Image 1 (cartoon, helix red, strand yellow):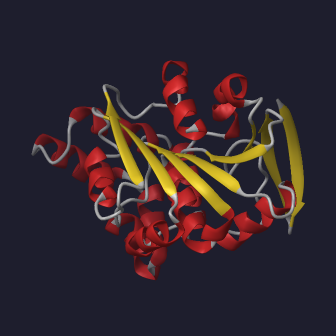
Image 2: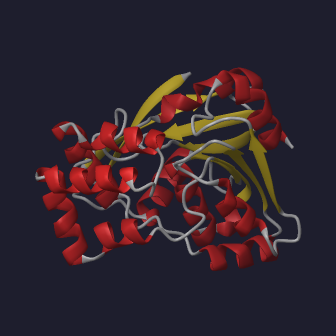
Amino acid sequence: METHFIPYRHSNIHYYKFGQGPKWVFCFHGYGEEGESFRIFEEPLGDMFTLIAIDFPFHGKTVWEDGLLFEPTDLITIINLIKPENQYMHLLGYSMGGRVALQLLQVIPEQINKLVLVAPDGLHKNKWQWLSTETRIGNRLFAYCMHQPVGLLGLIDMAAKLGVFKKNLLKFMHYYLDDAGQRSILYRRWTTMRKFRPDTAAVKKIILRQQTRIYLLFGKYDRVILSKHGFTFSRQTSGLVQVTEIEAGHQLLQKKYVALISEMIRG
């Protein structure tokens, strides 16, 4: 494993490098995680692939000093500073990182060979995310709720009692909303990554035109990212998007699933 920093504008972008193989995989982590999450793939894939895992703004060791906006063009520039010129890429995205990978496929499809998306966000339009990050009123309300969360937490608890969502999802939401520090970083992370919102219809057209293979892996008991969105997305892609559902929850970046994910990357 190697660890590096790249100066970018006023910021300092951190990334991990695993393996030294001739093929390149860019790995995108989930919310609240960091590039080191992909270290588990170094042993099974390091001879065939060079894996690059970038820490997103307000994650890991990256020091982001360029306001609350990180755009796809920023990430593409950073990627081009890391990889050799004209090097094609595989993309491996987990959770939020799946949304990032899909956005890159939409913008630079000619540079991408394959996507492996694990419990991926971005396969359907999240109206709440759009409202809270892309509209002025919604973002102000989002900021207010992060500073004054009592009303929001009360609504969440009431919704849980009415059966709108299950108890394990309630615990997940309280984990990020009960603590002032977690609420503050949640606001910054969501707002900063708001431009990564792939157009799934456009992405499907690109998949068919470019013949891009995509592997989707879901946990059957995942209450955060639902597998039904993957099955819906895979329709009308002539078998290019393959969906696998396993007996698991959301946390799929674990050693017991490494062999399965590694085979998707190699295949």
